View (spheres, rainbow, N blue to C red):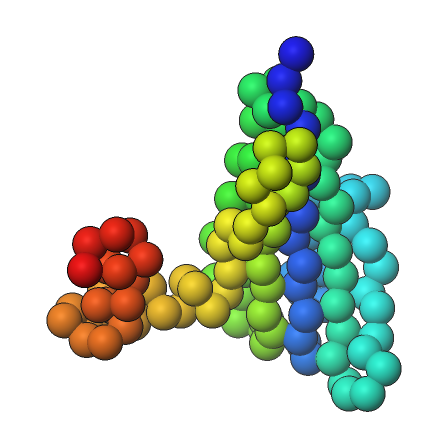
Length: 128
């Protein structure tokens, strides 16, 4: 028996149609339709959790697909939006796993070592 740990990706932005198509190709029925924002020109979609227990082949497969999808988002020329991967479930360790803003901060830190951003990341890692 394994632990159920739900991982979901939420994508929001202005030009996310290409990202949505990419998600549907990779995740099929786990992808919601594009949902328009109530007060702006933004749209959102969700990649729902796979429902598998940790360590099972289905869970491992979708872990790889989520990782590949996030990397592909970084390279889409027509993507203008934000995304976040969240984790929640039986382990009581609800958290944000990854996100577009976190990746942007880390890229900046790699380009400018010793900056405040770099220092902040080190504090998060427990290395003040």
